Length: 526
Ligand SMILES: [Zn+2]
Image (cartoon, rainbow, N blue to C red; front, side, top):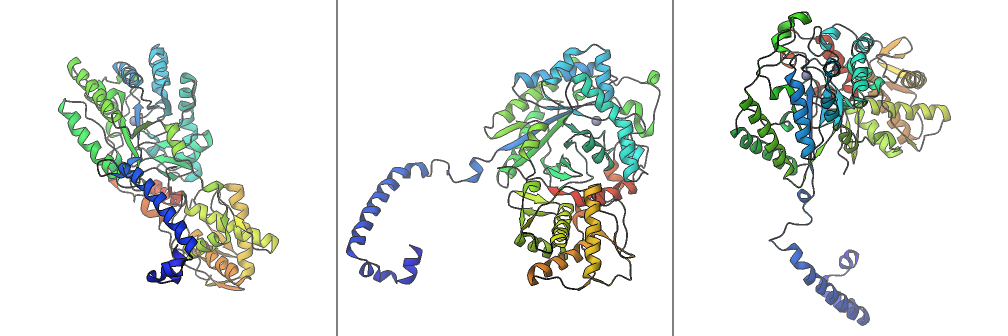
């Protein structure tokens, strides 16, 4: 119809139309009118618009419990009670268990607690939690590899114990308090843990799940993190209002995930088990551990009632769905490794990295700066091997560099042959180490990964556009901006009463920023 009306002015339609076609048109119009009349009541003002996106958008809620208190025996009962309330309501949560808590439950013969928690998802929450030194303090002066090995040496034991005692491989990890360190990611990946589930301010993208360090992260959920307080009945209305605001905001945008977390011990104690023992770097021996003060029976019941009412309220929304750690992994499954990038896609990406090095959002998936690095380097490496431009290329996960270097001053320009040699050298390192090299050698001159990638982008752009390599290239400055999603080292991100006073770690945050190469938003599967 469009082509027809463009060619002939409207007043000449009937004249221009053969008689038979005209009669057919009348028939079709009557037919359509009949169906329009039939269909009309469905789109009446009184019914929801069937085309409205908000009508079908699901809001997902992940409910998780840091199950950690191995000092106060009543916290075992709290874990049992909370797990049973949820089972009765048909809701599955994720319980992250401390290694020492698992051993303590076993020693106290609490098979009932272990069985009740096992009906939910099981995660891991460090071996000893708040005994000094906690993971970030221990790793605070270490480099990448040393930190990875140290985390593996000190934390693996608790992971294995949780696995043995619960008979389930923990699906996720999250640090004690603010004791976060990027080196934990590689160790966890080697153990087969796919999900980082916790709260903190060290890294994050806009309060929604993201990929970092090769793991899916539900972390730094900020404005999308909420809960009901457990003190008085009025807390429930307040929490409902707060959830309603988050719910409406997500419904009116892309939808997404809400994070709600507790510690079972909060239902029974007046103060945290670790604060009364390990605050400000203290580390008393076990025989001197004090039990925290507990709430009155009435206060405890009020807390459970609030929690039950709140869960029932969340469940009352037909478009709110509770998800476990395992389900979140399915919801945010990463499609990038299965994508074939066409020559046009490569050209687009090669152009983009010359302006800015950051993650890229594609329809239905995203790619991290490290994946872009892998994609473009592999593309050129394949060309160099066959002397033919490949029809497509793919990306693979690799870690970011682990040291910073400045590009040498003498490397203003380079020949095609020098770039080709560097590209093949980098390709071998990517394949062997699954990591972007910290320095890329062009003869005797090192380039930073960002400068190399921007230079590579220009070389590929010319190769694809001209159909042949440009023999002399200039070194470009790479503008790496993904670090904006990682916090700068400051006291605020380390606020946790268990740390020694004034603790902070520029070394950890420097490594964290380098791993911003692996960062990208997680895309909700539609
Ligand atoms: Zn904890």
